[in-house]
Image (cartoon, rainbow, N blue to C red; front, side):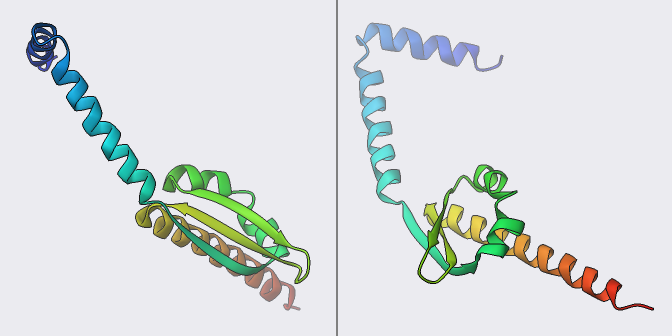
Length: 122
């Protein structure tokens, strides 16, 4: 609510200048958007086992994509029988998504290891 006087001032200014200031600002935002799109990068994590992808990653891949704001795609390789994960976004989103994916795999491996250890008892 403290912003109301400022908003009124901007509206009055825009009306008095026939919106030329608003058009200028929208042009700046358009250029920022173009720069952001050009900044997209891609990282491919190759050769993951299908079991790992199916059990550890697929159940939470949507959550990781939403939290990291990174586009995540899974591509299968029929020749080698492995899966590739493609991460797309800026470098920060890719690093965040990759860390979250690694953590998910590590947690899954730890659970599997615990199950194997528990099964060895008398």
